[in-house]
Amino acid sequence: MCLAVPMKVVEINGDMGVVESAGLRREAGLMLLDRVKLGDWVIVHAGFAISKLTKKQARETLAIFAEMGGLG
Image (tube, rainbow, N blue to C red; front, side, top):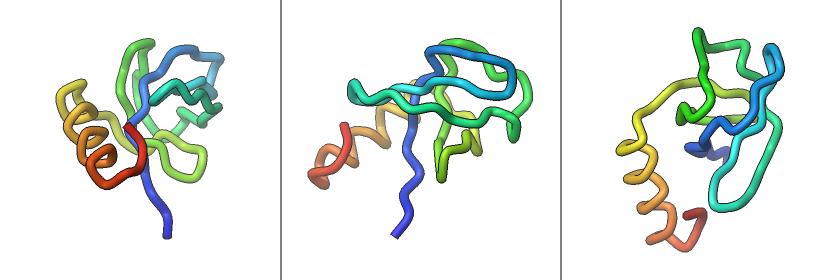
């Protein structure tokens, strides 16, 4: 099963960035999205940011993951 995770963009280096969620940092490709900025929340799947979302949407999704015993 694959899971896409909301993560916050904390560094940007061209088409690549570092994203963070629940203290976990990962490198992710940003080339699939337009105008990604530091502090943006994105959905990360298979090492790529595939969609932007609001902070509220990210919090709600991470809360659901936490309830399920997953991320959060």
